[in-house]
Image 1 (tube, rainbow, N blue to C red):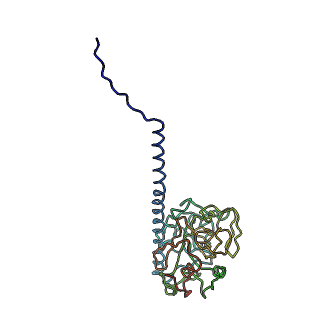
Image 2 (image 1 turned 180 degrees about the horizontal axis):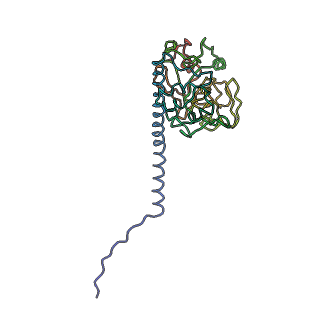
Image 3 (image 1 turned 90 degrees about the vertical axis):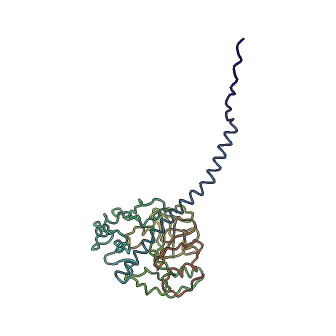
Length: 310
């Protein structure tokens, strides 16, 4: 008689139902974690964007310390932008040395300089990143900037919203001769110098989502053709931003919306709920997209005499 073999229990396998339950639980956990991961990444991108703007704010004040005046929004004869003057102040001396001020910014001699992407001028949250190039004309290409000089709150923005414009609607970097800090009588800590206008030259509207290929906006702001917004290049003298106000759709102006309705030469960013800005004292402030002309106007004008709401 043979001895009885010891019985070894067979390993228990997952049933199909148990496997599906585990997969469903993992899917739920991933779905719960994904927004938190995305929020953390956006927070890091927003902080990097703010750091870029702090460098620009410091550069503007360094320029003022050296020359007793801020750079003009543009040089007219020949045409150059305020950023080309500021290049040495934010450690772009090599690009400044390559740039030829004796000819206009879009001259063939300036192609090597103006096609140079400058990381400090790019918000990491903006689609396309540093590789965006504006095809200005068939023969002129230029690297872009996500930051624009806030040169004016246009009078039509006030009147279209039932408000009376102040006597002086100009921003800090509004003139072709430059501005002394002492001329900012509304207070440096109350006034925006530079503001985000991100995503250019591609045309974006509220969402954010891509705008139509063509948009005839009215009210004096630039029209859009071929899905391209004008003035996106950092070397372009037309890169400044006079705020016109838009309808909520971002397709027509004027209207009640002044932040994040369109990047067609208006304040616009890819951050949640607002845009970054450089204040006259060199600090960086986040402006919420719930602001209207009544709230943003006093922060754009340098000598409007308005009282800011607390």
